[in-house]
Image (cartoon, rainbow, N blue to C red; front, side):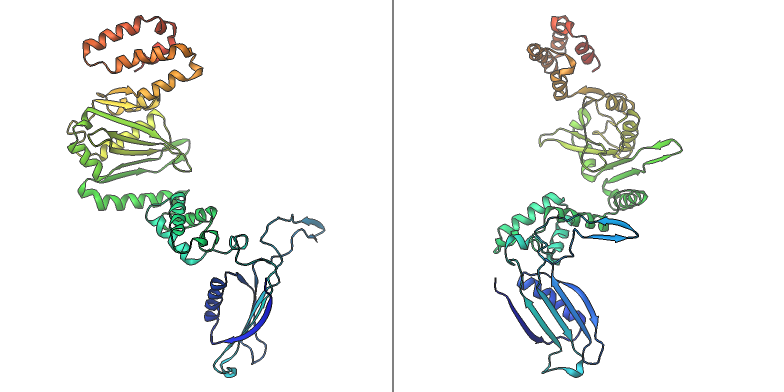
Length: 414
């Protein structure tokens, strides 16, 4: 690597302009010179001195010091960044009266790095640029998560005219940097993640949503989570968008058959989300969403009751309640839905029945699982009531069904 010392003068007249010049110098040279100290001049010939060092020079670690008669040990952290680089940059701001040919800042550059500068091993330690931060904030504002934003940003960078910037952290932040940026963006634009301020922000969002979309069928409701004096109030967030309302009004299948799927692990608190949907010629269409803090029958009943209050007057194609509801294999969900919609028939999804059948703890013999599955399939796909009665008679009298009492009682519950 070429090492040299040079001095020159530049036409700057303030501390702000010096900081901008240093930023431009770092971007152009791919180096990272950081401020070590700034000292005001003692005489009339110097206004201020700026001392910068290469960011690959850090304080020595692994030193043993005694303080208050106690031995403190700082463990040395092995990191390729800390090379004790001697490179320096010194700038001296001169007073206007001592301008030399219009130049007011004197610069001394000691370009004697003990490491390569424009290589991936050094570029990966550069600080993030303001432009890369802005680009990521724009992606977050358009609904991207940290993972999808990183993929989108890196893909665009690879197809740009400078794909070599992939190795430069200044232009391509690391995954951990992206998550840190997302946390900052979320705190500023969405709010904090816990505590009373979280619910205050949610209540504000719900109020704004109701005011903006109420006239076209959009409604939302939120109940704060609280645990005071042993009385727990669960979190309930119910949403019915204008699209959901139109599905209720115009899709005939919404009164015939409804699917309710409970999912979780979408966020840090693992709150379950219940998605109410129906089928159509175009595929599944949503009818409502409920987020709760628990999956007990009481909480599900409260959540679905609040959701039904968000529905339009002609909900479920004017019937007010669905005829059939297909759910997951959950006793609490079944009991909670029966309290909400008394006239609806609660059905079990065949996928969850197959999972129950394949579960080893239920003691179903491997050679008999397929036979039992075929018996249930004939019940599900019976085309007429007479065919269903006949198949159910065969089902009850089948020896495999009689051998497994737990299987028989499991089917009888539905």
